[in-house]
Image 1 (cartoon, one colour):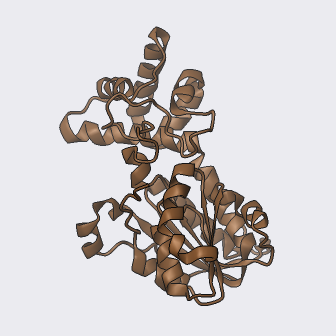
Image 2 (cartoon, rainbow, N blue to C red):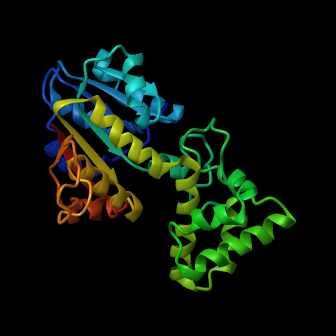
Image 3 (cartoon, helix red, strand yellow):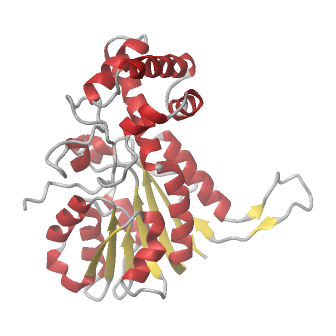
Length: 316
């Protein structure tokens, strides 16, 4: 198997905030092609251990080949990162971990179709791909099943996450009208439908179509619910002093990660002016009051990193 080129996003910041050290145990919650895992293992010394999680068996195969030189220091598990506690139990780790990385969203390999030989319909630029949008190729819920089965209220909620104002209702009306004629099952059909429904031209309509695809991908993979559950599970898995690093790629992820980390810092459950409000237990100390951005040099060499934001916290 030929392992695709896989660049780790914000590598220096990941190492700075994760601080891998010899003899410690780390989890890469979205191992992908293994680039971040390789970075962590190279910086942590010969006695460290890494557990890599991914829902996509093809991604795990790429990671296994890339990380083969580390031998038994690596264990790869097919799992979602929010299921980290079960994954750790499956490899006989029950004493806690020292660090965890969550790198949100699909890999470039998945977007390009390199994990299956054909894409899964993640991108509006794809021509005639099946509308799956699944990180786990075996999961039954797909983009085409959502488009076929969701009622109007559900569709308004789904597309309301990323589309604006009147765009939402226009897109939903077009979907309902189109599916009455025939199921919406391919990327070219969905792209043309959104192009007609969203009254823009040129680059503007391309951005709005991409936003519609993002809404479907988020829904199919339960990305926002998974991220919140994943943060909570990581906090449970981490030892005191353990570090959590999260890389997010769009506004909904940015806000969710920042808000949940702040909540886990503890403090009053209500406004500060509300005397006597119950206090939340402090579980984390946030190291990045504002998310970190990739440096310009990285953006120049890896444009896919442009939208990345890094959040970091320490278990207390």
